[in-house]
Amino acid sequence: MTTPAFPLKLSSSHLLASPETNGIRGWLRVLHRVNPVLSWTGWLQLALLVVALLLLPYDTRLVTGVPVWLKPIKFCLSVAAFAWTLAWLLADLPALAQRAVRRISWTVAGCMLIEIACIFTQAARGTTSHYNAATPLDAGIFSLMGVAIMVNTVATAAAVYLAWRYRPYGPAGYVWGVRLGLLLFLVGSVVGGMMISQNQHTVGAPDGGPGLPGLGWSTRAGDLRIAHFLGMHALQVVPLLGWWLSRRLPRRAALLTWLGALIYAALVALLFAQALQGQPVVKW
Picture 1 (tube, helix red, strand yellow):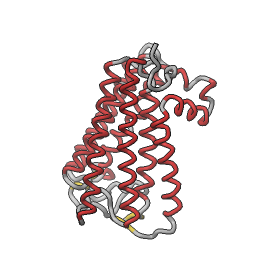
Picture 2 (cartoon, one colour):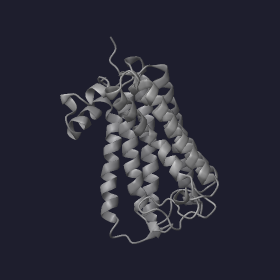
Picture 3 (cartoon, rainbow, N blue to C red):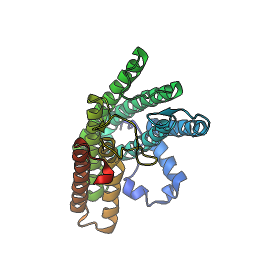
């Protein structure tokens, strides 16, 4: 019998309620055991998060109207959540899929390392990382980020295929939560690609200007980042919904998970359409 690429765990729905995952420390131990590559990727983001937080009060430079280290902070949190969630979900795939899971994990880890390195480099230089072609160096960094995100999207598409090709462990509601959450994450990635194609995330005004506190989403024009954000975080929301429904309403969990995912997708589509019309989210 061949050894899987990563040690297999029981279904996430079972482990979340087991003594092994009693508290955050136990959850992190299981996460590291099932996928050390993406586990270390998440820990690296948290280490960089501490660096950015330490620099934030001392570096008063502004980029597009916000503190220069705010963007690295947000991306560190986002990448850590992405890496750890993906590791958890892919570990529920059967042994037949684990060799492909290993390839996906290394690909995602490499892409995220490139992405965060570019963001930190540009923050240290006092300039923006996205949509920046002011100098050959800036254009080269942004192009490198674009390639990394494109490769990461392909890896995510492979993860979506695996989740639909092989049934993940767990009850039906959780299984559909994993599949639909990964699919909606891929949709969110496509919205990100549209922002790159138009070379900015604001519709109807230049990037920057007044925005929601902490988030920066435009309050004067449309902002594609809102639909992008919700689409990306379907990776956490929809599987958790499926897991919760499987525990509370097991007979109807699959149907209700589908319904919840459709409502979530409709919200993403509505916010995307609103942004394309140049309307800020505060005028919804």
